[in-house]
Length: 77
Figure 1 (cartoon, rainbow, N blue to C red):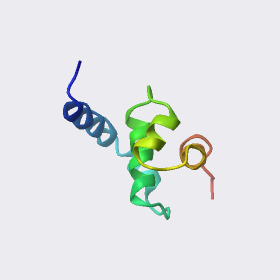
Figure 2: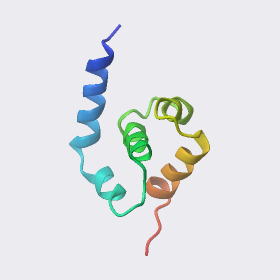
Figure 3: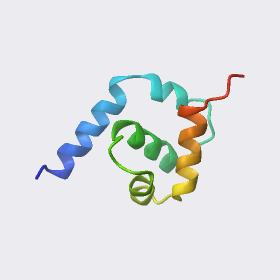
Figure 4: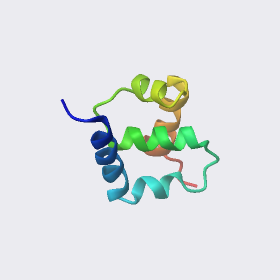
């Protein structure tokens, strides 16, 4: 079983290895928890929205809506 700190570091490294998710999050009025959860979604696609939402104390529906609005169906303004 791997150590939780090592897993967190690995997830963080994956999230920041590609600047695209950070670029997407810029300019949006998000809380720290929402930003962290979205980066967690990006870095750990094997986890469910529910797991990540609970970790960051968000509602699953809110996290899922943000994910789809920002990463799956971004508006082309």
